[in-house]
Amino acid sequence: MSYDRAITVFSPDGHLFQVEYAMEAVRRGSTAIGIRGKDCVVLAVERRALAKLQDPRTIRKIVPIDSTTTLAFAGLTADARVLINKTRVEAQSYRLTCEDSPSVEYMARFIARTQLKYTQRGGVRPFGIATLIVGFGLNDKNEEVPVLYQTDPAGTYSSWRAQVIGGRNAKSLREFLEKNYNDDLGEKEAVKLSVQALLEVVDSGAKNMEICVVKTGGVKHMMEESEVDAIVKEIEAEVEEGKQKGTGSS
Amino acid sequence: MDTVFGVEFDGGVILASDQTNARSILTYQTNLDKITELSSHSAMGISGPNADLVNFSEYISKNLALYELSNDGLKLSPHAQANFCRGELATALRKGPYQVNIMLGGYDTVKGEASLYWMDYLAALAKVNYGAQGYASSFCLSIMDRDWKEGLTCDEAVGIVEKCIKELQVRFLIAQPNFIIKVVDKDGVRTLKFGADPADN
Image 1 (tube, each protein chain N blue to C red):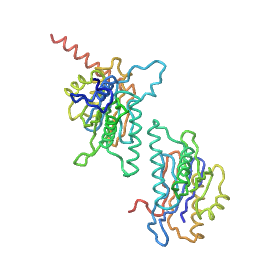
Image 2 (cartoon, chains in turn yellow, green; image 1 turned 90 degrees about the vertical axis):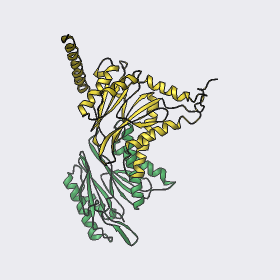
Image 3 (cartoon, rainbow over the protein chains, first blue to last red; image 1 turned 60 degrees about the vertical axis):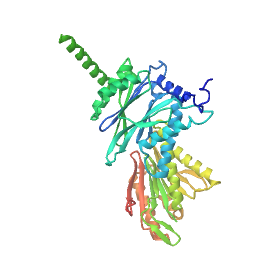
Image 4 (cartoon, helix red, strand yellow; image 1 turned 180 degrees about the vertical axis):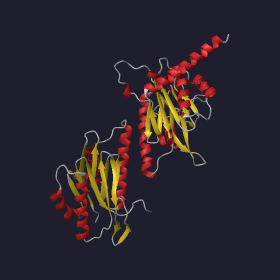
């Protein structure tokens, strides 16, 4: 008896296999990391080795949804394109009807709701992507604070201080972040932490990473390869120093 | 009853409109801004009932924003924007028409040139050097015909606009005490002067 045919069927032990297979598709995708600093949010994605003849500018893993919200995804790129387009239309539609910009939480909820819809209808399959949505929102004291949300193929969404999606090593990277994260990260420290984490999965350094810093008002700054390179070198130098100190102290 | 007109100069466009919002015998407000910014380098002066004015301009500007976001920051040229507007007017014409007459002015940042478009509620579109919508055309076109020439400066174009405003204030039956003048050029859209502050609530 195969319970993974139509997604609307539960297996006897309560699994929705199609949703779980979609999550497997996310694991096959390239890694994306989101880190919430005290006054910025950093998105760092692994840019898998491109074919020589391919134009890297046409591969975008960090995309604007709205002038105040940015998104990174992991998983099937085509599914991401469709979901992102729906989300962009929704953002403008919100602006048209409410004469206000949608909050990051609203966009995350919309994406999650859309991903859920595709797990409850026959004849369609779930989106094989997980997303990290970042921007700024107001806390209960009405101060502007950075926010980071994550959605997954099951249609769940939640807020995180730091999160990893995609890639085979997501679990170990999450542990790395748990060990090294603190609530007081400034922009430089948050970027450095994200590069450190990515270096665990990415082999060749700056040219296989894309880092984006989002600051107040949702203003995003994609870091140049040279800037990222400088940080990679800084980290490598520290690692070398650490090794030498280690051998020297014996 | 609304006055909307525009004059193109070398490197930009001046758009001007009156600021009265009225219906029948009642004036609702005298500080309405009828020239809405569509994108960073284009603006649209619209005449017609306030409902259609606001509805149409917001709909167009949100769709233009969506295009920019969906296409990696690519901006639509004023020519494309004008044709998009015309298309929307044409589609709505035989369903539920927008009763708006428009002067659309924009600066193409890629080509480095300005353009002005005249559009009416029947979805006619024409690219013009200067133009006016409504009763204003009867008073202002002759002034613009005489004074406009190729290669005007911004100040000269504003001069023509102010001449037109003065003419309307002397000869047009309907008193329009306040006018708002905006310029669209390589630096974007900005307000040059207004009779009453639109932000005054």
